[in-house]
Every structure is written in structure tokens, then in C-alpha cells.
Image 1 (cartoon, rainbow, N blue to C red):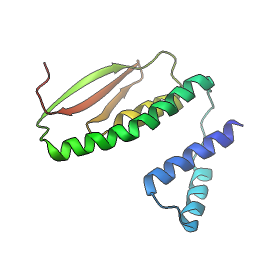
Image 2 (tube, helix red, strand yellow):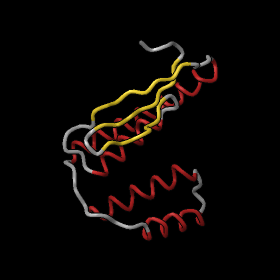
Image 3 (cartoon, rainbow, N blue to C red):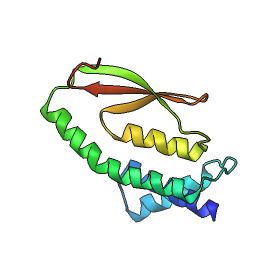
Image 4 (cartoon, rainbow, N blue to C red):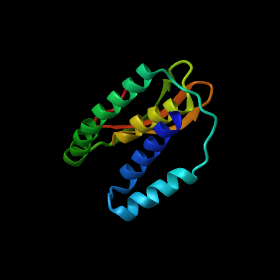
Length: 129
């Protein structure tokens, strides 16, 4: 079961990256997802995945709003913050966290510290204290 979820997840990322649903691209995506190496599977509870997917769906409209805001108003200030990684996060959930943070145009993860921190670069209209 986990293998199918992993395959669908990787294929979904492929479609997000390529934005192409032609039969050729679907075939290439399936081949790529099957050829990618698989690590040890550490599963998270379904409620954790459900929250992550809900957050991802909410981040998509937020990313559009932020993109328009960047186009309309100058964002001349930047700063770096650190955010604590939730306790006992699996590698799949860490990937989802990084994807969520980086999906929005005003933030990007610069570094993941295995000791439990994300280093996040932000841009803003106003200087942060």
C-alpha cells in the first residue's frame, strides 16, 4: 500500500514540475518514478498526512496572492529565520514541510538542520525587527 502512495506522490510532483499531461509525459513520469531509488519506509499516521495535504491545498491560493503582491508592491527587505521542525518528523513529512515553505514566493528553505531546524529566507515590504 505504501508503495502505491509513494508512486502517486512522486508522480504528482512530476506533474507539478512539468505541468504537462500529454501521454508521452505521463509515460516518462511513470518511468522516472519507478527508477528513483527508494529508501526505508517510515510511515506517519494518516492524520499527519491529512493535515499536510490540507496545508498544501491552502498554500496554493496563498502563493498566487503573494505572487501578485510581489508584482504590485516592492519587497526590498529580506531576513532569515529559524523554524523548529515538529517532533519525530519522517523524511517524507520533512519534504512536505520544505515544499510548503518554498511553494510560497516570499519564502524559501535555505537549510535543513537534522537537529531539528529549518532555516528560512523571507522577503517583505517592511523591515522586520
